[in-house]
Image (cartoon, rainbow, N blue to C red; front, side, top):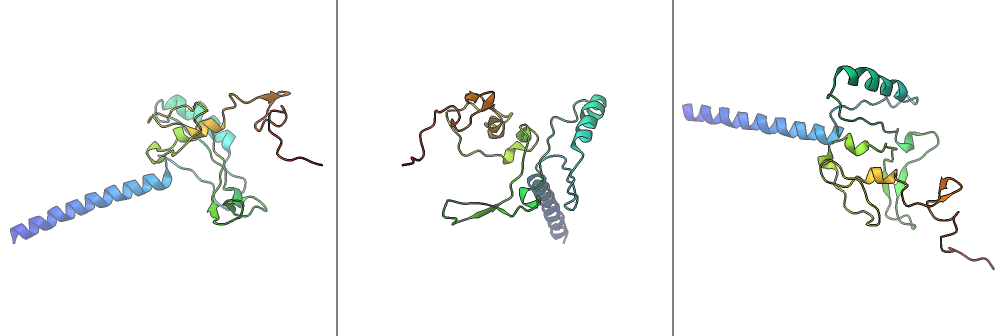
Length: 173
């Protein structure tokens, strides 16, 4: 009888340990960072980003050094904006289409999340992307980098149209 009771106690302890680990991993994967603050869906004004940034930089970080490594803001999903429908990504024929939640993120986004869930699969070898602390390339920071892009009257020419370096896509006769 003692052996059965002891087995039950050990089994229960292992079960609770596994449940605790699973709950922790689910929260990590769902939230993506230590702290997430979200504006309610019915609040179309969003968070007061300027005031929050000002408080973090000038009040909290000054009195609590080392508590915050980095932070970032993300936009509402584009489909929640006025007169925007769902965003679908597909080939030109429209099939198959994948409904996608598209949001705007800042350059330091990947420095603010758990990087163990960020797994880049491919990148353009012509660009030098910065590295994250886990050794992966930072594709988000690469979006914000205009190095190697020609300028036309002070503005970047992403598609080489204004500088005249693109091939003609069509001809008129």
